[in-house]
Image (cartoon, rainbow, N blue to C red; front, top):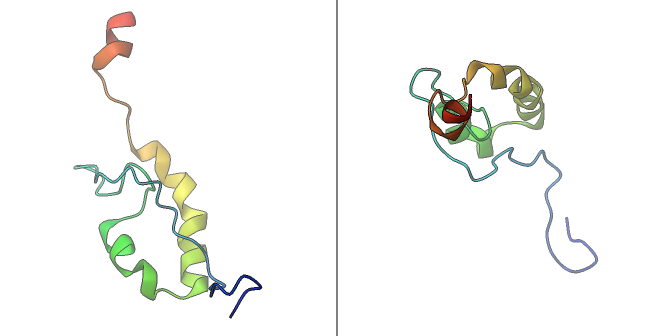
Amino acid sequence: MNDIDGVWKRKEIDSPCIKLCSIHPAERICVGCFRSIDEIGIWSQLSTDARQKIMQELPSRAPRLQKRRGGRNKRLA
């Protein structure tokens, strides 16, 4: 689809990537967007419905990642 400015735009769900890409070693999900490695790898090939389903699941994955136990917050406690 061409937009008024001549740029082609797709009607699909954007990636939840926030460019904080690191896979949690135990949970095997990205600490930035909470997707699995497999989901990240096939994101561009997924249908809109499949992306939407994953997007709905992401907030429930956040609690699986524990905050660091050390660092500044540990010293202040």
